[in-house]
Length: 389
Image 1 (cartoon, rainbow, N blue to C red):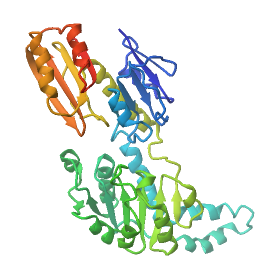
Image 2 (image 1 turned 60 degrees about the horizontal axis):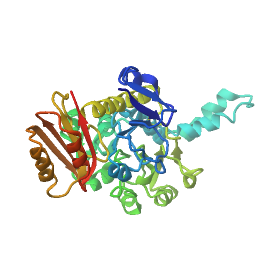
Image 3 (image 1 turned 90 degrees about the vertical axis):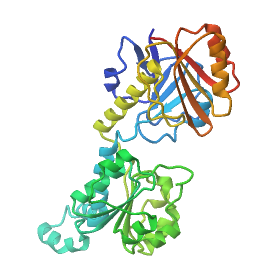
């Protein structure tokens, strides 16, 4: 049996290392897909086929995918957090320099000098207009200490900066990777008041949308620079423009241009270049390819965006995997059906995430097709799969 994997964008061919030709048919023209590989294609109007089991987003953001609709169709959505972290970190370094040294203004000025007869003398006389401070010794505030934020914080230490990190939800894994030289702030206000540069590395959610508003900007150290290489929606654009015009902000450097910011003095815009490296694209594709392969073959869920994570080992005995509503009595109904068929439960895992849950049961013998259909018929079930060794 071959799995069908449809690609909705041009995808790096490195997936061949995981999705082997003997087991997978991968391409843009593949029909009735079991899985989808996508980068930026908008899937909100995508017709979800009954064969579709999972979607792998080769990147971190999933704004282009209808997570709730996919969940209710029993489709797990994966992303690749951290796969593009180094690429974004390197662009943040450039952003810090652009916010400090007035590089873009100097470049534009040099373009006007092509016909000047005494070029060298003019350059020496004019360069003072583009002077800017060094980074060493300044304070860098990092808001969000995930995969990217940790690398940015450690990079700031390497540049000789005083680094202040803020993340009330930092994971143990990321905490271990953080340099001991990074000071940990317990309140966002501390970062705002002390930092010469504030860089954002948090996901865009309802709770973070517009988090950098006029009130927050008013708490920032006067003359500080704000960097946004996460998502444009994190900031109130009108408030940022006002802060720039009043010179409350020294600069705003963002990877998410919008019409309102074009031409605004000291607003430096780059065209969403954060993950635009061949290495980053390859890393993202490799990661989601592994996640798709594991899920299709074993039911293992890692880096899911709509269902709970549930890493699993290989299938050694019959395995029933159920995506379902997270409501009372579901487990009881499942075990009742298994017991009625005389199946012994060798191992069971149940994980939940909000209104959704995932239950995996390894059983003593192969269940009948009729049992699987009865489990699918439960009004709490979104998807039921039987995986065999």
